[in-house]
Length: 453
Length: 160
View 1 (tube, rainbow over the protein chains, first blue to last red):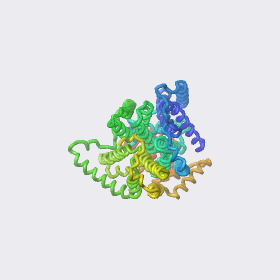
View 2: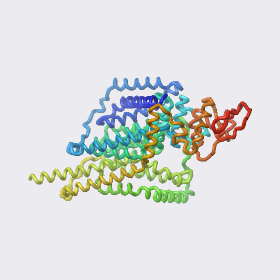
View 3: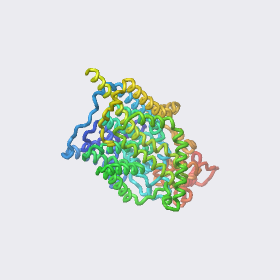
View 4: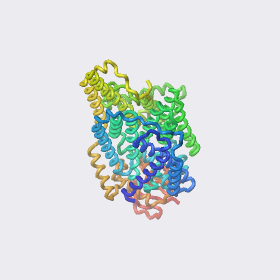
């Protein structure tokens, strides 16, 4: 198949996933606008397609396309027959203050144009050649190609000593998503890269939609633009790895978390559970973030905190039953033994020293800009995310010191890992921008009223 | 602080007293800081790299192909790509293959496993499990054994 033909096949597969996802999301999408609906539909669709694919290949190895499409059709028909459950009554969606929209319209357009242009740049970059990064070849792409070309999930992916370096313990959603999309395009590792710009697009839609709904259109557009120009994340080498889908899932978990802080509806609970399941199914770090979110909600006496914990537990159980126990080869857990605590502290010091001298000094200017941005803006809607993001980074640093390899070598991946958190970080940052802007508008209105009196 | 509370703060007397100019300068400063953050990320993009990728992208759209050795995947050794392609073309999909190649960088192993999938690629110490041995950079000299096939940059041995 030609590149263009295969790319259209991938696009068709992604659209079908979004349609199936929409059929499910519409049951718990109360109050969401179109951009958020798009993002949630895509994420839910990826999860559903992966599950249907596993069911299909376990019954009919090598012939999954027709069963998957048939099951998709059944879900879509079932959703529209069932309609929306009575328990999920529509609620008024917080609207954007009109006062800000009028004066910022031109700026919003400029920001969205920047986001669109940056997205196109990544699209071209990702699709310019077959996916090639080391993690793609050794982990995500290898599993996907073996699953797609054999038509089932061979047990050797998890038990073959010759594949010990392929991280059999990693979650499978990225590999399964590529395998599902290849049903529509054949195995074309250049066209399949389209999956990653689509994940970016969904991330931008989720950020824009959430902030437009909860803060303002301007802060949503700013978050979309700031995230889209995050080229250390959205670059060719990352198409094929789990970083970009992971960043997407983190944004969904975070927006559901922020909604759950002020809304106890079942719709929010369902979104939190679905997002958590997607997140833990993409990367192991997802389990950590989801557990942090669950703990943060439980600390605030929000029973919604059980949803992320249940999703993480369910995912771990399903993987354990499906592929047997897997030992993470990247970590040396004997560092937990009291006799090695001294060694662990020494390694932690080395890692921290490396992070400070290499990463922090290298990025001093943008880091300083971020610090000043926090100083010049007041607290915003997404501030509760900040400790979770910082704890996640801290956990990365600690985990490097427990690495089975040289901790400094392991710490070399920190910039790549932290970049996955950047879209989440823009959520925090851009939610703070509008606070200041609203105050300024209020001040101006106050002055006008005083002048009239 | 209740993070779910989206109500704006009550303006303090001080903030009420802030002038229009001060509000604007704050917004200007915030915009400048965001610009610094954005530019620091945009600066990681190489215009030459974009041009190279645009050329490959348009060529692909026009129906051309990007040979494995031409792209970034075989940065460590472009000659390894045609070797693996020849192994792939001459072995069945259910074959188990020993690939003898340099151990470093480890991407030699990963490329072999990925490009030859779904064939099973095993290391040399598992040769007893293999049906083929693919030797990269093997010095082939008029071997008459029919189980040895000359391929680009190496040789392929059928094990019986």
